[in-house]
Each structure stands twice: as structure tokens, then as C-alpha cells.
Image (cartoon, rainbow, N blue to C red; front, top):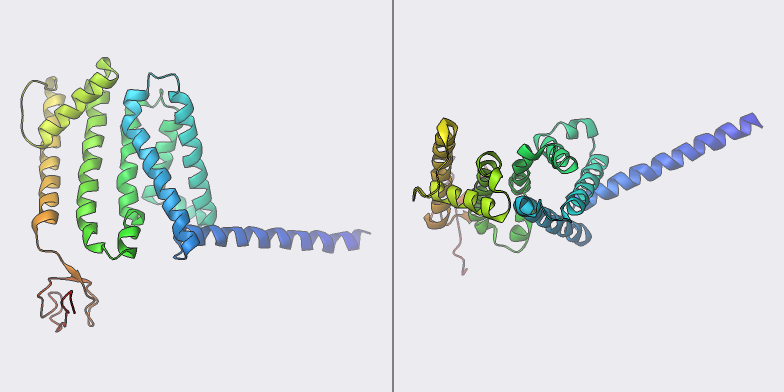
Amino acid sequence: MLQSARPASGKHRRKVKTRVTRARVHLRRLYHGRRPNALRFQMAVLLVDLAIIAFFVFSPILRDEPAFLFIDYSVAAILAADIAARCFAARNPLRWLRQPFVLLDLAILATLLFPYTLLNFGFLRIIRLWSISQSGVLWRPLRRWGHQDWEQLGRAMVNLATFLFLATGFVYTTFFRKGSGLEGYIDALYFTVASVTTTGYGDITLPGSWGKLTSVIIMIIGISLFVRLAQAIFKPTKVVHACPNCGLQRHDPDAVHCKACGQGLNIRDPGD
């Protein structure tokens, strides 16, 4: 009896292990694949991420609403499920958990689970928009539809938007929290935009030395991001043409030689 039970138990373990392996492979294909069902899944995840980011942007305004905790914990459950699914699908879960973007998501999850205890760090949630941009998920539809030339402009806009809302959240939490709600958040956003554009109306200023240092940092970083955005808008558009020698992808439309290695190029006109 015991001898017959042991092989059955081992067979059951192998079946469970096989099912787990298949589930991990299936999830991995959904998150990183290029088939139609994987692309639909990735688009759905992206839309959910954008909805979560919208909640992050407006959470200072919604914080005093009765339904805030329900929405907050619902978002926490969705984010926790996404992190768990990605960890389960990873080839090396421990190495995956040590990646900076994953650590950022875990920090964001902590602010969602303890929205009032970790109130001062809630503004960091908007960095998730930047992490999604860096992962490339946001730009896959452009590449698939042949509009990859817009990617550089899109990245510049996302970087600027991320910084604006990150700075607004910090200013609101640190300096305008007493004027909580919509009015305080609008004051923080107004000050941030006025500082980034160096308009400097002077009707809203930050008190003390820390306020002055915060204003200086916002101005310097904001100007840099505005310059990057202006470059993306006005500089000549690059075309995608892989160099046969070094593999450089982007070149000027009228390039005859690769600027990286000097290899001769034969870039066709768009109408050819």
C-alpha cells in the first residue's frame, strides 16, 4: 500500500509542477509577447495603468471624499495583483524583485496601503508614469502603427508632465497642506507651472530657505525639460534606417553616411 501511494504522490507533484510552469509561460507571453492576444492584454494593462495614474494625480483632491479609501484600496489590490503576476511570470523572481522599477512599485503600493500614515510620500506615485514610459509599453502602439517618429516627442512630454505633477505633489504636501483640497492643490500647481516657465508672477511664493531652494530646483529642472521638449518639436525628424555596419537605427532624412561609423547609406525617400 505504501509503495503504491508514493509513485502516485510523485506523479501528482509532477502534474502540479507542469501546470505551474505552463501558467508562468502563459503569463510571460501575455506580458511580453507580440501575438494579437498578448497585445490586447498589454493594451488593457496600459489603460488600467493610465487610470491608476489619473487617480494618483487627483488623489490630493479626493482625499477628503467618503469614497477615497475604497478607491485607494481597490487601486492597491489591482497594483498588488499586477506585481504578483509579473513576479510569478519572471524567469528569476528574486532578481526581478531587485529591479528599480519593481522597488518603485512596491513603494507606491505601501503608500496605497497606508494612505494617511505615508501621506508625505504619496506624491511619489506619479513616478509610475515615467517608469511606464521607460519600459516602452506606452510606445508599442506607435511602433506597431508605423509612427515611431513620435516616440521622442512623446517621451519628452511624459517627462515634463511627470515632473510637473511630481513637483506639484511635493509643493502641495510640504507647503500647501493646510489649505487642503482643490484650492490648495491648484495653488501648488499654479506655483509649479509659474516656476517651471520662469514667469514668476510673485503672487504665490514658498516661505523660508527651503521654499527658495525648492523654487530654484524646480526652475532649473523645468527649464531643462522644456528645452528637451522644444528640441523634440523643432529639430529635424529622424528616419528609421538600420546601418548595415554598426546597426544605428536613426539618421537624418538626407544622410549619405552613418554618423557613427561612416558606412555609406541608401535611405529612400518616403514616397519611393
